[in-house]
Length: 333
Image 1 (cartoon, rainbow, N blue to C red):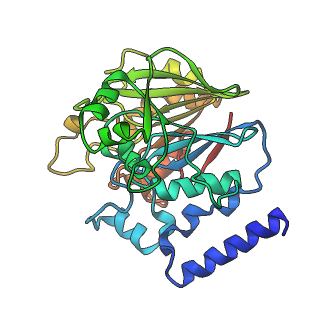
Image 2: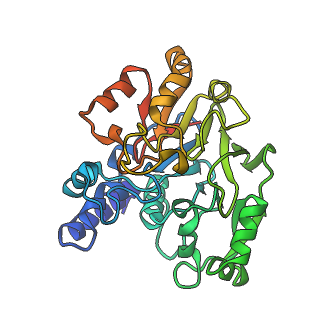
Image 3: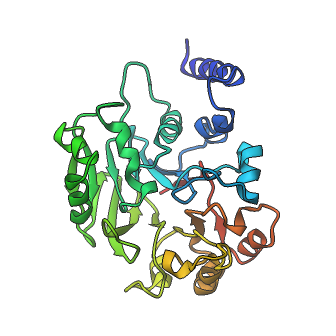
Protein backbone atom coordinates (compact mmCIF):
# COMPACT_ATOMS: atom_id res chain seq x y z
CA UNK A 1 0.00 0.00 0.00
CA UNK A 2 1.40 3.42 -0.94
CA UNK A 3 2.34 5.92 1.80
CA UNK A 4 -0.56 8.28 1.03
CA UNK A 5 -3.04 5.41 0.95
CA UNK A 6 -1.71 4.05 4.26
CA UNK A 7 -2.03 7.46 5.87
CA UNK A 8 -5.61 7.98 4.64
CA UNK A 9 -6.57 4.49 5.79
CA UNK A 10 -5.02 5.11 9.20
CA UNK A 11 -6.93 8.37 9.61
CA UNK A 12 -10.20 6.78 8.52
CA UNK A 13 -9.66 4.04 11.08
CA UNK A 14 -8.97 6.61 13.82
CA UNK A 15 -12.01 8.61 12.77
CA UNK A 16 -14.16 5.51 13.19
CA UNK A 17 -12.61 4.80 16.56
CA UNK A 18 -13.37 8.34 17.66
CA UNK A 19 -17.00 8.05 16.64
CA UNK A 20 -17.28 4.90 18.76
CA UNK A 21 -15.75 6.67 21.76
CA UNK A 22 -12.26 5.15 21.73
CA UNK A 23 -10.70 8.57 21.15
CA UNK A 24 -11.98 11.53 23.12
CA UNK A 25 -14.01 13.54 20.59
CA UNK A 26 -12.74 16.85 21.95
CA UNK A 27 -9.21 15.92 20.87
CA UNK A 28 -9.69 14.56 17.34
CA UNK A 29 -8.59 17.77 15.62
CA UNK A 30 -5.73 18.18 18.08
CA UNK A 31 -4.13 14.85 17.24
CA UNK A 32 -4.51 14.93 13.49
CA UNK A 33 -4.43 18.52 12.20
CA UNK A 34 -5.35 17.88 8.54
CA UNK A 35 -4.65 21.42 7.43
CA UNK A 36 -0.95 21.02 8.19
CA UNK A 37 -0.14 17.79 6.38
CA UNK A 38 0.51 19.06 2.86
CA UNK A 39 2.10 22.41 3.65
CA UNK A 40 5.04 22.94 1.25
CA UNK A 41 8.41 23.08 2.96
CA UNK A 42 10.00 26.53 2.79
CA UNK A 43 13.04 25.30 4.72
CA UNK A 44 14.13 22.15 6.50
CA UNK A 45 13.33 23.61 9.93
CA UNK A 46 9.81 23.78 11.33
CA UNK A 47 8.50 25.10 14.64
CA UNK A 48 5.12 23.61 15.54
CA UNK A 49 3.04 25.13 18.34
CA UNK A 50 1.81 22.18 20.40
CA UNK A 51 -0.23 24.18 22.89
CA UNK A 52 -1.07 27.74 23.86
CA UNK A 53 -2.80 27.51 27.24
CA UNK A 54 -1.43 28.35 30.68
CA UNK A 55 -0.36 25.40 32.87
CA UNK A 56 -3.95 24.38 33.68
CA UNK A 57 -5.07 24.06 30.05
CA UNK A 58 -8.42 25.03 28.56
CA UNK A 59 -10.95 24.06 29.78
CA UNK A 60 -9.40 24.12 33.23
CA UNK A 61 -10.31 21.46 35.77
CA UNK A 62 -13.41 22.30 37.78
CA UNK A 63 -13.95 25.68 36.11
CA UNK A 64 -17.14 26.76 34.36
CA UNK A 65 -16.28 30.33 33.42
CA UNK A 66 -17.41 31.53 29.96
CA UNK A 67 -14.20 30.40 28.28
CA UNK A 68 -14.20 26.96 29.90
CA UNK A 69 -17.88 26.43 29.14
CA UNK A 70 -17.30 27.36 25.50
CA UNK A 71 -14.39 24.93 25.27
CA UNK A 72 -16.38 22.11 26.89
CA UNK A 73 -19.27 22.57 24.48
CA UNK A 74 -17.10 22.88 21.37
CA UNK A 75 -13.63 21.29 21.16
CA UNK A 76 -12.38 23.84 18.65
CA UNK A 77 -12.16 26.34 21.51
CA UNK A 78 -10.13 24.06 23.78
CA UNK A 79 -6.35 24.53 24.05
CA UNK A 80 -3.49 22.29 25.09
CA UNK A 81 -0.79 23.50 27.49
CA UNK A 82 1.95 25.71 26.06
CA UNK A 83 4.78 23.89 24.33
CA UNK A 84 6.76 23.90 21.07
CA UNK A 85 8.19 21.21 18.83
CA UNK A 86 11.34 21.93 16.84
CA UNK A 87 11.50 19.71 13.76
CA UNK A 88 14.45 19.04 11.48
CA UNK A 89 12.51 17.79 8.46
CA UNK A 90 15.59 16.59 6.61
CA UNK A 91 16.83 14.38 9.42
CA UNK A 92 13.34 13.46 10.66
CA UNK A 93 14.28 14.55 14.17
CA UNK A 94 12.17 16.45 16.67
CA UNK A 95 12.86 18.24 19.92
CA UNK A 96 10.44 19.36 22.62
CA UNK A 97 10.56 22.76 24.24
CA UNK A 98 8.86 21.96 27.56
CA UNK A 99 7.20 18.67 28.50
CA UNK A 100 3.60 19.33 29.48
CA UNK A 101 0.87 17.19 31.10
CA UNK A 102 -0.64 17.06 27.57
CA UNK A 103 2.46 15.35 26.16
CA UNK A 104 0.63 12.24 24.91
CA UNK A 105 -1.63 14.22 22.58
CA UNK A 106 1.18 16.57 21.61
CA UNK A 107 3.47 13.66 20.72
CA UNK A 108 0.84 12.38 18.28
CA UNK A 109 0.62 15.83 16.69
CA UNK A 110 4.37 15.80 16.02
CA UNK A 111 4.58 12.26 14.71
CA UNK A 112 1.66 12.81 12.38
CA UNK A 113 3.34 15.97 11.05
CA UNK A 114 6.60 14.10 10.44
CA UNK A 115 4.65 11.17 8.92
CA UNK A 116 7.06 8.74 10.59
CA UNK A 117 6.52 5.00 10.69
CA UNK A 118 5.03 4.49 14.15
CA UNK A 119 4.73 0.71 14.48
CA UNK A 120 7.24 -1.02 16.72
CA UNK A 121 9.00 2.17 17.76
CA UNK A 122 9.04 4.26 20.89
CA UNK A 123 9.21 7.50 18.87
CA UNK A 124 10.69 9.54 21.71
CA UNK A 125 11.96 13.06 21.02
CA UNK A 126 15.66 13.41 20.32
CA UNK A 127 15.90 15.85 23.26
CA UNK A 128 13.76 17.94 25.60
CA UNK A 129 14.51 21.51 26.65
CA UNK A 130 12.91 22.90 29.81
CA UNK A 131 12.09 26.51 30.65
CA UNK A 132 11.32 26.09 34.36
CA UNK A 133 9.72 24.06 37.15
CA UNK A 134 6.06 25.09 37.05
CA UNK A 135 3.62 22.24 36.49
CA UNK A 136 2.74 22.93 32.88
CA UNK A 137 6.35 22.96 31.72
CA UNK A 138 8.09 19.85 33.03
CA UNK A 139 5.64 17.32 34.53
CA UNK A 140 5.22 15.58 31.17
CA UNK A 141 8.61 14.03 31.88
CA UNK A 142 6.76 11.38 33.91
CA UNK A 143 5.52 9.75 30.71
CA UNK A 144 9.10 8.89 29.73
CA UNK A 145 9.62 6.92 32.94
CA UNK A 146 9.41 3.29 34.00
CA UNK A 147 5.60 3.20 34.12
CA UNK A 148 5.15 4.49 30.56
CA UNK A 149 7.58 4.89 27.62
CA UNK A 150 10.68 3.97 29.68
CA UNK A 151 13.15 5.76 27.45
CA UNK A 152 16.90 5.25 27.67
CA UNK A 153 19.08 8.30 28.42
CA UNK A 154 16.70 10.78 26.77
CA UNK A 155 18.64 14.09 26.79
CA UNK A 156 16.96 16.75 28.95
CA UNK A 157 18.52 20.21 28.69
CA UNK A 158 17.92 22.65 31.55
CA UNK A 159 19.71 25.08 33.85
CA UNK A 160 21.90 23.77 36.66
CA UNK A 161 19.28 24.83 39.24
CA UNK A 162 16.51 23.03 37.35
CA UNK A 163 18.78 19.99 37.14
CA UNK A 164 19.29 20.01 40.92
CA UNK A 165 15.54 20.21 41.45
CA UNK A 166 15.00 17.12 39.29
CA UNK A 167 17.92 15.27 40.89
CA UNK A 168 16.90 15.96 44.50
CA UNK A 169 13.14 15.37 44.30
CA UNK A 170 10.97 12.38 43.52
CA UNK A 171 9.58 11.09 41.31
CA UNK A 172 11.91 12.93 38.94
CA UNK A 173 15.12 11.56 40.45
CA UNK A 174 13.87 8.06 39.61
CA UNK A 175 14.01 9.02 35.93
CA UNK A 176 17.67 9.84 36.44
CA UNK A 177 18.44 6.81 38.60
CA UNK A 178 16.88 4.41 36.10
CA UNK A 179 18.61 6.25 33.23
CA UNK A 180 15.32 7.12 31.55
CA UNK A 181 16.66 10.65 31.10
CA UNK A 182 20.11 12.21 31.01
CA UNK A 183 20.54 15.78 32.26
CA UNK A 184 22.52 18.34 30.26
CA UNK A 185 23.22 21.84 31.61
CA UNK A 186 22.20 24.88 29.59
CA UNK A 187 24.38 27.96 29.97
CA UNK A 188 22.38 31.19 29.63
CA UNK A 189 23.71 33.32 26.78
CA UNK A 190 25.61 30.47 25.14
CA UNK A 191 24.30 29.29 21.75
CA UNK A 192 24.27 25.57 21.08
CA UNK A 193 23.19 23.39 18.15
CA UNK A 194 20.61 20.62 18.09
CA UNK A 195 21.25 19.77 14.43
CA UNK A 196 23.26 21.48 11.66
CA UNK A 197 20.08 23.45 10.88
CA UNK A 198 18.74 24.29 14.38
CA UNK A 199 20.48 26.26 17.10
CA UNK A 200 19.20 27.86 20.30
CA UNK A 201 20.33 30.55 22.70
CA UNK A 202 18.81 30.33 26.21
CA UNK A 203 18.56 33.38 28.46
CA UNK A 204 17.30 33.99 31.98
CA UNK A 205 14.05 35.87 32.59
CA UNK A 206 12.55 36.97 35.94
CA UNK A 207 9.62 34.84 37.11
CA UNK A 208 8.30 33.17 40.27
CA UNK A 209 11.37 30.98 40.74
CA UNK A 210 10.29 28.86 43.70
CA UNK A 211 12.00 25.68 42.48
CA UNK A 212 14.14 26.71 39.54
CA UNK A 213 15.16 29.72 37.52
CA UNK A 214 13.31 30.47 34.25
CA UNK A 215 14.52 30.50 30.66
CA UNK A 216 13.40 32.01 27.40
CA UNK A 217 14.89 30.94 24.05
CA UNK A 218 15.93 32.45 20.75
CA UNK A 219 15.65 29.73 18.10
CA UNK A 220 17.59 30.02 14.84
CA UNK A 221 16.84 28.02 11.71
CA UNK A 222 18.13 28.15 8.14
CA UNK A 223 16.60 31.53 7.27
CA UNK A 224 14.69 32.94 10.24
CA UNK A 225 14.72 33.37 14.01
CA UNK A 226 12.00 32.95 16.64
CA UNK A 227 11.81 34.32 20.19
CA UNK A 228 9.98 32.23 22.81
CA UNK A 229 9.11 33.71 26.22
CA UNK A 230 5.98 31.98 27.61
CA UNK A 231 6.56 33.14 31.22
CA UNK A 232 8.06 36.35 32.57
CA UNK A 233 7.34 38.57 35.59
CA UNK A 234 7.10 41.76 33.53
CA UNK A 235 8.96 43.47 30.72
CA UNK A 236 10.20 46.17 33.11
CA UNK A 237 11.66 43.59 35.51
CA UNK A 238 13.85 42.11 32.77
CA UNK A 239 17.41 43.36 32.36
CA UNK A 240 16.95 43.40 28.58
CA UNK A 241 14.78 45.43 26.24
CA UNK A 242 11.86 43.39 24.92
CA UNK A 243 11.58 45.91 22.08
CA UNK A 244 15.15 45.24 20.98
CA UNK A 245 14.81 41.48 21.43
CA UNK A 246 11.67 41.27 19.29
CA UNK A 247 13.26 43.43 16.60
CA UNK A 248 16.08 40.87 16.30
CA UNK A 249 13.75 38.04 15.23
CA UNK A 250 11.14 37.26 12.58
CA UNK A 251 8.57 35.72 14.96
CA UNK A 252 8.00 36.32 18.68
CA UNK A 253 5.82 34.06 20.86
CA UNK A 254 5.32 35.98 24.07
CA UNK A 255 3.67 35.67 27.47
CA UNK A 256 0.01 36.54 27.03
CA UNK A 257 -1.29 34.85 30.20
CA UNK A 258 -3.73 37.65 31.07
CA UNK A 259 -5.34 40.23 28.84
CA UNK A 260 -5.91 42.64 31.73
CA UNK A 261 -5.46 42.83 35.49
CA UNK A 262 -9.24 42.65 36.07
CA UNK A 263 -9.53 38.99 35.09
CA UNK A 264 -9.08 37.50 38.56
CA UNK A 265 -11.40 39.29 41.02
CA UNK A 266 -10.20 39.02 44.59
CA UNK A 267 -6.62 38.12 43.67
CA UNK A 268 -3.59 40.40 43.42
CA UNK A 269 -2.42 39.71 39.88
CA UNK A 270 0.93 41.41 40.56
CA UNK A 271 1.82 38.51 42.89
CA UNK A 272 1.10 36.02 40.12
CA UNK A 273 3.25 37.94 37.67
CA UNK A 274 3.06 38.12 33.86
CA UNK A 275 2.79 41.28 31.74
CA UNK A 276 -0.78 41.78 30.57
CA UNK A 277 -1.50 41.74 26.86
CA UNK A 278 -2.74 45.33 27.18
CA UNK A 279 0.68 46.32 28.51
CA UNK A 280 2.45 44.46 25.71
CA UNK A 281 0.29 46.16 23.07
CA UNK A 282 1.61 49.50 24.30
CA UNK A 283 5.20 48.38 24.84
CA UNK A 284 5.57 46.66 21.47
CA UNK A 285 3.17 48.74 19.41
CA UNK A 286 5.94 50.31 17.34
CA UNK A 287 7.47 46.91 16.54
CA UNK A 288 4.12 45.47 15.45
CA UNK A 289 3.41 48.52 13.30
CA UNK A 290 6.67 48.07 11.39
CA UNK A 291 5.52 44.59 10.39
CA UNK A 292 8.96 42.98 10.26
CA UNK A 293 8.36 40.85 13.35
CA UNK A 294 5.17 38.82 13.74
CA UNK A 295 4.17 38.97 17.41
CA UNK A 296 1.93 36.25 18.86
CA UNK A 297 0.60 35.87 22.41
CA UNK A 298 0.67 32.40 24.00
CA UNK A 299 0.40 30.75 27.45
CA UNK A 300 -3.18 32.03 27.76
CA UNK A 301 -4.95 31.65 31.11
CA UNK A 302 -8.45 30.19 30.98
CA UNK A 303 -9.84 33.57 32.12
CA UNK A 304 -8.18 35.52 29.29
CA UNK A 305 -10.66 37.89 27.65
CA UNK A 306 -8.93 37.45 24.29
CA UNK A 307 -10.11 33.82 24.16
CA UNK A 308 -13.55 35.06 23.09
CA UNK A 309 -13.23 35.06 19.28
CA UNK A 310 -15.97 37.69 18.94
CA UNK A 311 -14.89 39.85 21.87
CA UNK A 312 -13.45 43.36 22.00
CA UNK A 313 -10.12 42.09 23.39
CA UNK A 314 -9.46 39.85 20.38
CA UNK A 315 -10.42 42.66 18.02
CA UNK A 316 -8.02 45.09 19.70
CA UNK A 317 -5.15 42.62 19.39
CA UNK A 318 -5.66 42.07 15.67
CA UNK A 319 -6.46 45.71 14.91
CA UNK A 320 -3.11 46.73 16.41
CA UNK A 321 -1.13 44.26 14.31
CA UNK A 322 -0.66 41.48 16.88
CA UNK A 323 -1.91 37.88 16.81
CA UNK A 324 -3.16 35.22 19.19
CA UNK A 325 -1.22 31.97 18.86
CA UNK A 326 -3.16 28.80 18.08
CA UNK A 327 -2.51 25.11 18.67
CA UNK A 328 -0.97 23.53 15.57
CA UNK A 329 0.30 26.78 14.08
CA UNK A 330 3.59 26.31 12.18
CA UNK A 331 6.56 28.49 11.31
CA UNK A 332 9.37 27.61 8.93
CA UNK A 333 12.71 28.98 10.13
